[in-house]
Length: 370
Image (tube, rainbow, N blue to C red; front, side):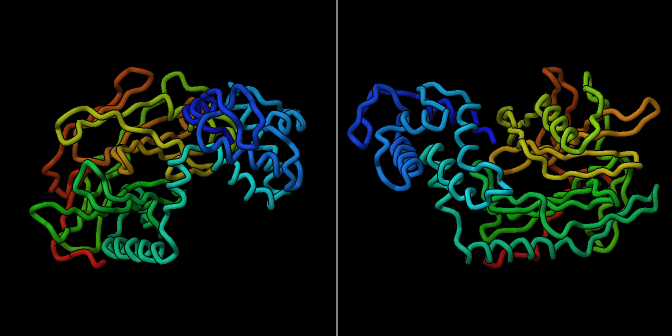
């Protein structure tokens, strides 16, 4: 594991101060977490006896030393010391959590401690089940392949209230093909504003397919996009596709970081979107056209505004890396690769045509049940 560089920079900020046990060291990390790390290292080194006067003495005793300005790799070593092999030493995982909490800022620990209790999780599960029930009768297929798609049992993404928007909560579900590749998505979310103070529910459909789709099973809400939702293109300058799953996973994450996305949020200003480092979906199968692939999300707050597909696809020249952007918003979007713009989508606020790859449907008959 590697701690974020911003966190490391904050941790390694130094100042002159006296350590809690009374010994004096001129430089040490600032902040309350210093005291926690200090107490932990003493207890860990001496079996609970406070005979190790400073973290320096303890860390030196395990061969790591202690200097004011450590690199991320140094901190990784320290954490790994407490974890060891996570499979063979499962009892140490709890200790590693304590160490990680000590190394992170106060806000991180406060956030962890503020998570909803068990009853809150039950409420959340009920809400997700409610959202899925609003779409479970909708079926999709790829007519060119005569292939039905399968709706995922659980959402791939759960979003909460958006501070800069009227969205209260929501979830994103995928319809996938036989190798698990997402071909269609829907964001089910609740909106509250002056026009709907009690809240209304909205379905935001997005085609993630390179071919038309056929919808069935829900009357007026049937969505039949007649044109592709994405366009796959080779990733410029990408390295050859690796052999193993783990190697390809690292390749896809690295390739995703080469891309940027932004949206013209509420038509006020361009907002740079944040790439989530962990893909929301992984798919592919040997012997098919898609050997491996992943879907990454670009978000504002906790709301995905665009998806990025990275796929190892077979072609006449062998298997190579391809990419495609997919919009998850009605606002104008731009995507770039290594500083060069490669994708743009205009604003589509009136997305009421079910033949288009982006389609929004409001469910006025459904009101939230809290």
